[in-house]
Image (cartoon, rainbow, N blue to C red):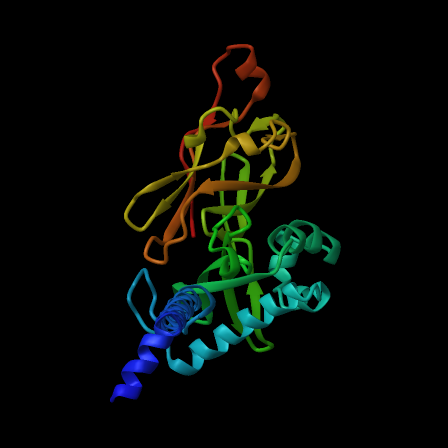
Amino acid sequence: MNKLIRYWNQNRMKIIITVIIIVFIVILIQTINAILKNTRHEENENKATIVDISIPSESVISGEELPEETTQENVNIIKQFVDLCNKKDYETAYNLLTDDCKSQLYRTLDLFIENYGNKVFNTEKTYNLELWQYSVNTYTYKVNYIENNILATGEINSNNIQDYITIIEDINGSKLNINGFIEKRNINKSQEEKGIKITINDRFIYNEKEKYSITIKNNTDKTILLSEGIDNNDICLIDNNEVEYKSILNGVSSIDLKINPNTEKTINISFYKIYNLYRTIESVCFRNIILDEDNYKNGEDNLMIENLIIEL
């Protein structure tokens, strides 16, 4: 016992310093472990909310669920498309698009690269999905493209982009419509009155609008105006609840709205209409077709067609 007391008295400072160093090292190790644990937890949370695409099987609009097999197939083709774009293999990605999407938005591979590839995938993107709406063989997903380096920086920036991608299934397999384009539907419905025949050829459905290909045949000897192009109510859509959707006439030139005597013209007119499966468009209404442009300009009495309705 005396030896221990003597040793303590002789080496007191050394022992105290050694104990302090050991305690400091233990505290430092515990602190580092706690920091690493928190960091891993935050990374796992970020990965769970950002990187994990999940398997969205339930429509956020209707609450209806897709079969697991269909959901997996849909997720796979979207993943394939994104992976190809991230790798800059735009030609293979372009071949995943429907012919309708190509003809409407990207007639050539160069246009696809310039207006989608270079803009959306200017940097590498990850993404997450929501099943938006679906009908028979048509599935629309809301896609949030997310900057990949968000995992490192934790910052959300303008390079994060939202799109709507629609998967179309036919006998040739699954193809994609992108950039908010949903689908094309053939209509081919006509109505004729006072020598004017109007045919609705095709309907192009987008997430935030609808566009119609319309052929007007003027069988009279007068120049007609489909509309003056001022009032968007001149041409409108009417749905199953009798709700009207205005046209976007400021996107149509006055020349397109004029049809010369005994001629035929095909034009495109767009309408303000959000994509909604439960709002079925039943007709297109033309309210103020001017049957004689010259008399109309001269302020003379003029025949008009006030309500030419084409049932779809």
